Length: 302
Image (cartoon, rainbow, N blue to C red):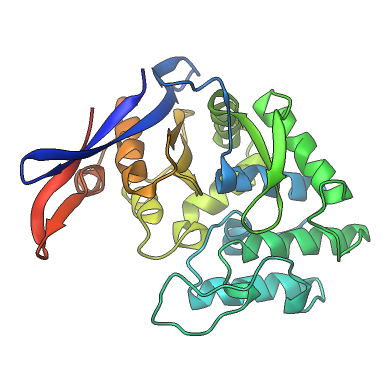
């Protein structure tokens, strides 16, 4: 049975959302299984750590903040934009080599736009840098048949332990892969549990050390990672989240209708199912419903 998230306004249940959840303990034993977690889903940007792993295996050399940015769905803050440009410059490439769409940053007070502002620009810059290192074509790097994308797909299938059920095109133009929530959880568990000198651990260390670089300074994903040191969390479009804690506790969540409002509340419930909690999770786990600018209700996970 799926989870139900109730939107309560002035004491009445105004709306409901349904969600899938899968969590495992440090030994990989299931703790919570809610909904059809075994059927293929589209993790969207939650797969970026796996895409980055494929790039590192193909020769990409990034460290620290820039590696975290390669795994990011960033807010387009100035340090994100400068970081994407730095990755490109390191490979001797111009910004217009990016094939992601032009976009505005999340902060609508910023009126600049461009490909480097697009939330996936770190991943795209890293893809281009990987191609430059391998003398692979630069103008077709998002094509599913490109050597880079074939290498990434192989990495996804190895890490999830599944054959990709279907593939498509993500919002940024790069290929996306449909796999089960079970497979994504299995893949995420490998990042902190790999050897200290492994690429998997390098990605885990970069993301947990630099949460603002993986999303944004005030984004709920970064707030959760700061509140729970040792947590690696990656969100994806259509309300998908995947996470792993440093001891191997891990999970995935998916809001069935793709609406984002319940995503963080369900992720907090998933973390709490594993005994991971902190004071800041109280606010994130029960978002307020406003009326006239003041709280008149909340979201409740059942």
